[in-house]
Length: 351
Image 1 (spheres, one colour):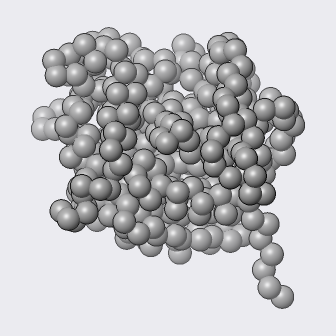
Image 2: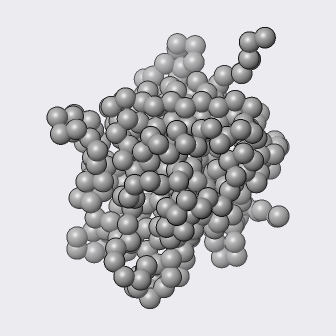
């Protein structure tokens, strides 16, 4: 399928040297940032952000990575949110990687379909997993063509893990390694993402206080106060709600999120009817989640792991004292380091 990127948006943005150690223990390299819009379906433009080490222009498949977000919030306000001067995207790029994030249609800076110009009750849910896979495929093909390579690493978070599982089960030939951060599988407990009573509308509206309540679900009361460092939730919420100017003008402000994922949750993993075969994933897989994750509880990863029989090797890691959103909590570096270990390693089984 022909995939063509349409517009080169941002001039190169040079970021200063960061105060974290590089792979060899020295100062991490400066990083450059570019932004693109990539054509997916007709009329759909997908926002893509790229970061890479300054001065490096050639990357092999094992040093190229594409990230997709979860059910409610866009990619850039978590994966590339600078906390203490560093985002996860920066962390990976500083270690010699060409790193991309994308917003699925209806999220962040990608095309907002016309359903979002009308009251939610006037349209059916949209931006489901099948549509999201087409958006991911457009970006993967764009990156492969741009770098002259056949494969890339893929990371999905939450719903993004369902997108990536289904996608890789059909496209292992385009994938080097797969990271499933907070992996989705057949649900045995209620989802924290709900559309409310009555017919399912096109999108749902999330308030700031609701976002915090969901974030802290499952965290012991005596651990909540210092889980999120001071100012980090506000930094994330300010950046995230600003991506939806229409919702931000409401009183109180809201973030609008497409309900295609909610519909799919009821139809697929909520009903025990997974439309892809994990056995068809033929690449190395990391499943990683945190202890207090109430969105994708441990049983999901534990039940998915034995189904990944086609993976050359696989790993399941559970991180202590973190939630579904450990990416922006005090223990986030544990997530960064474990994922980086998996990405960097050359697997050599004992003989």
